[in-house]
Image (cartoon, rainbow, N blue to C red; front, side, top):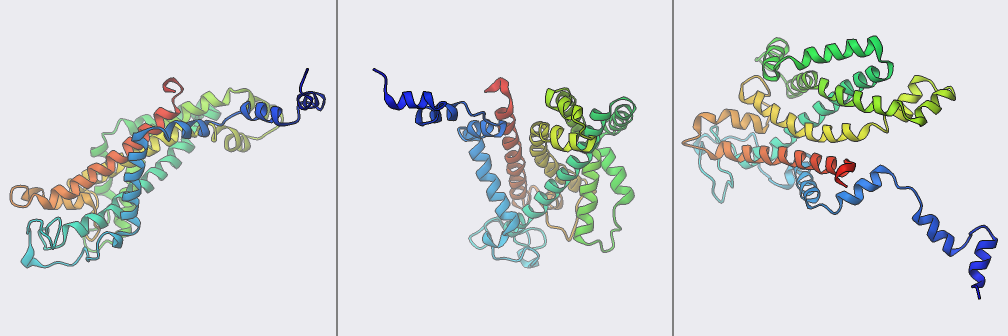
Length: 315
């Protein structure tokens, strides 16, 4: 004999506890829900996330990690090794290396994040326009991107920074950082343009885009309502890894003497200022270099974890 409650559920169209369980189990899941379910079970994601939080805390609240002034110099303590008073020792000018390493996180992360955001804007707009309008628009933007890709990164940075960099007399910190951020983005946008272009080309032939166009939706609505939201995954992965790449690029340019410079505090400047003292005071260079490497590794690990979680072949 059948259960009355089940019979009632069937009579009333499946309403009730049994139908609720079925409907809940059949509820479609979004891409980001599936991605989070994969990420939260991966150790590399949590390790990189914890490291990222630590670096962000250093950048936002350096006073939590040190109470010393990173610009205070005592020449009598020049190049003193690490001790209980100064955990990382002192640099050439007698400044606390630990304090400057902590405060250097702010500059390096700001440069990396802002340069990446500018790259996403430039490359994203160019890629979306090239993919959506195709034909001559695609040809022109693709050829421009190939020209920039053909310029060696370091050589292009030397030429641009040597031409537009502020005078050595008394540039302020914001101006110095802004110039480096713009140069990194100008030289880096073509790769992201290709990624955005490829993603949008795949998305624009989907049925929901064709339906929106048939219903009279304009280009602006189709791009921002349908194409961009469904093309964000590869852009997000590349942007995460690019932050780490730009932090390393900033240090490289500073090491060559064409990037950031005093009075800005950054890991790249600390390394550049003490490369000649590797034998007599390696601590002044090695500690900033170690933090730089860990920060770059953090963003790369996080980006790869997100990439693997979004890749259907690896699920």
